[in-house]
Length: 326
Image: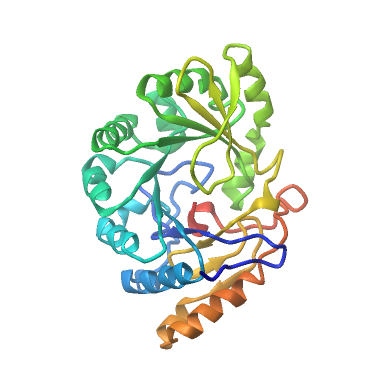
């Protein structure tokens, strides 16, 4: 099998595929209230175009695909796309990131389509605080989580963005919630993505602080979990709960980065914290053949930078996280 390798010797075997830049929540650190500057639908990659690009990545050795957004479940017909991606030769890990607001309606069909793992964005278990952070209703997310559990998804990972003075006092409650329901819990540091991200960066909290606080209540032992992401895992002794710590700011993991992001408009972003990119949509719509598409992706990977510069140049990235893909 061919292998994509970037200029720094990292194997690129993981694509985060954004199927929309739209969302049915408005988390203040991701997308501002009233924002409506979304990508025009005619610029979205069609399912056929997405299948072609992911098929090319699969030919080049990529085996992990994570469907993201925005909120991917607002894209009509998503289970159909998931089934098509699951059927591609070489793709053996298909996962989905979602806020779970619409998951109760789609959990069974996604499972049938071949989605194997779910990451659920959930920053608090307090209904009022959830509304303040997202503008939405917590009960819809809980319903989605329970539907996913009933459909047989495992593991189900909860992603909690930790914000000082906003939800950092919810950590213990979230741990208890995940122990009760058999979920995995992952803590994520805020990142300065766009104006919203830079505002949220005022709430930055080093996750080592959270870990030390948890160690006063729990015994944490080193652990691992399957997946292609950057989390460092610990297990709460006496339970099956695994805690992941994702630290792009305090302890960056650029040296092991194995991923690229494909946005809804066909832009391939080589780094979350840089502007290096390749535009694939014009090539697809100009009739590029598979051989040339493979070569275009190989050439794009040569642009992948060594590391992000969030700490050095926090004002560098002007696009919102929802525009890039999760």
